[in-house]
Amino acid sequence: MRWKKKFYNNFFLMMEDWIPKEASIAIAIGNRYIYYFADQHDICLQESQTVQSGSLADRIIRQRCKLDMMMNESFLGAPYYGIGYPIDVQGEVAALLVILPPNYPILRSEPFTFLTGKKAEDWSPIPIEEVTCIESMQKKTWFYANDEQYCTSHTLKDLLLRLPKSFMRIHRSYIVNIPYIRHISRDISSNLILSMKDGTELPVSQSYMNTVRKVLGF
Image 1 (cartoon, rainbow, N blue to C red):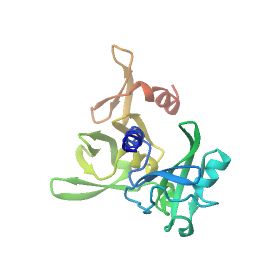
Image 2 (cartoon, helix red, strand yellow):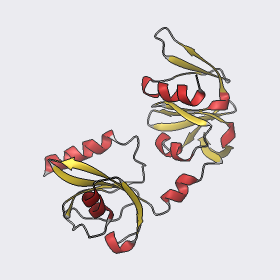
Image 3 (tube, one colour):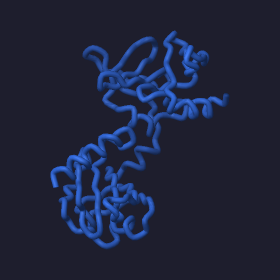
Image 4 (cartoon, rainbow, N blue to C red):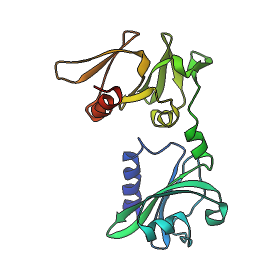
C-alpha cells in the first residue's frame, strides 16, 4: 500500500502545473475511494470510503467521460465543485477527482482588476493593466509594473485562470501582458525572443511557441 501512495503522490506532483493549489485530489475504483490528498479545500474524505450512487465519482466510472458539477453536502459531508476524469488503474476503470471550493466557477469567471504585491515591508494594489510581466522564480511569483518588482502570493497557474485576455503564457516561468511587447525576434537557435517595452528580453519555450504564434497572428 505504501508504494501505491508514493506512486500517486508522484503522479500528482507531475500535474501540479494545471491543478489549482486549493484543490484536493481523490481516486475511486468501483465502489471505494482508494486515494485522497487533502489541500486547502479539504472535505475530509477517507480512503476506503464507499462511493455513493449518483456522486461525481460514480457517474464518471459509469459514463467513462469527463464531468464537472457542483456537489452538495449530502454526498461527502461538505459541498464542493468537482472536476472528474476517467482513468485506468491496473486495468480497472477509475475516477480521478479534482475537488475545489463551491465558489470556484465564480472566481474563475471574474478576471482580476488589480494585483496586490509586496515590496520591502509594504503591500500595494496595482491596476492589472499596468502589469507588464509575471515571473515564477525561486519558488515565488513576481510581477513587474512601472519599473518596479513586486511579490504576490498567487502562483502562475492560479493567475492564468483569472487574468484578462491580454495576458499570455510564453514559458513555464513567464506570463506577459501583450500590449507591453515591443517586438519579437529569433535567437541563433531560432527560438522566439520577446523584447518588452521596458527593455526586458524574455524567451518563448518550444512548448508555447505555437500558442504564441497563434495568439499574435504571425
